[in-house]
Image (tube, rainbow, N blue to C red):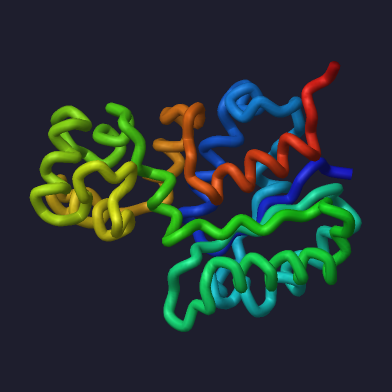
Length: 212
């Protein structure tokens, strides 16, 4: 049996998780015990479905792996056309996990509000490098505040995806999953307070505790 399956809605999510879980000693950044991760076997994209497709049909994508993986995580954005909201999405995805065979807290739904780009924004020079911004993070934030993407005294931009897209337009850099993978490989996870990330972290801590 493999340790954990990660089912995601799109290639950018795939890049983010692949980058993070491919880091040497990624478990130490989470504070959990070591577990095996192979992106070819343990990271799957619901091609052609995106977030609403996983909301309605995640169990169909999950079922083939119920006999091969002890645990499963489904990751989607909370914001999309017709979204019923973060709580309803989470409840539905957890139902899909149970229906597909992951019972008794062996599966976990991770719903990122409003969207994946919320995980991009951390005070780090690696963010500037990945987005092609040739200055300090403080200068980047100041530009985003001037343009209205980031409010003073807020930890994250109100519109994180639009903020990423604006910076990429300024640097004439195309948006791709490679950017998310590069970020996840370099930016520290310590101190991240995003609720969706903490949901993922808490699940992995329960499933893979540190050896006593």
